[in-house]
Figure (cartoon, rainbow, N blue to C red):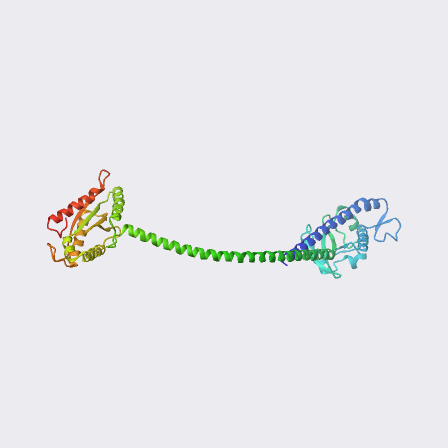
Length: 415
């Protein structure tokens, strides 16, 4: 419907544009014919003694006036039903043309006023005349030199002061466009039928495609459902595998008894932190701790109680407000190790003393200790700022030597 509406508007504009162009061409032709007839026929005839008159048929040696010849041509065109007609009129017609040659209606008055203001541009409108849409096209009839003498000197001329360039009157062309509109409407009807047929064909095709699409869609949904179930199963299996891998990693790097890092985890961590400290020229510290007289504890309380004591000591170490970058690990037997990145010797000694004090204050009974009646630890601390020539193992070695020195100094202390 939008296409048809658009085509209707386009055809209307096209018909009106063509009508205006044809009227313009016909108007120019009539004016040129009139002036040519005046210069080539009327003036030579008058000079030869003939008379130009609107009553040329009743007079001897007379020829028709230019305006009279135009009227004859207009009558001939009307008989041929060409849809074109013309008429000349002005505010000052000759007496024999007063009824038909004056400004007889509103359009004539508007045309005369418009052409007075702008004689080079035509004035036109589309109106309904005799039940048909008609173009009324008015152009100015400019007074030529060859016409001045006749108009000024004719005994019945209503005006005798004409000058070349004056607007002598108005030439109106009437062009019926009803037949063109009917033809365009028929074309629009044919176009409508064609578009309707194409649309119906397209709808049938679309319906067929939709039916096929629904069939494929149903199959696709079934496949998608099966795929979704398979993916869910696969995701579950992957989750189980991931948990298994995480448990395996945890078993690999976690001490089974105390649930803290084991020696393997410590070895990997110290390697990474050593390389980082080497690049950043930062200190790296290690604390080695050993439970005092733990063999006597095991021998007297039993290995199960000894394992419980190791677990409690490990928990105290984990809860000693260490940083996330620090690492607490079981090094072996009753021996533990703490790795402190970016920590100098003073800081490491403070951490070691805090840990030692907390373990003593936990008051885990140890009646067979030669230091106190509770479990205590001895701690050895070492710190290095690594250089390319240093050996990482020396850091652990120095911490172990410091631990030995703590034991030699009476235990339950930090060296």
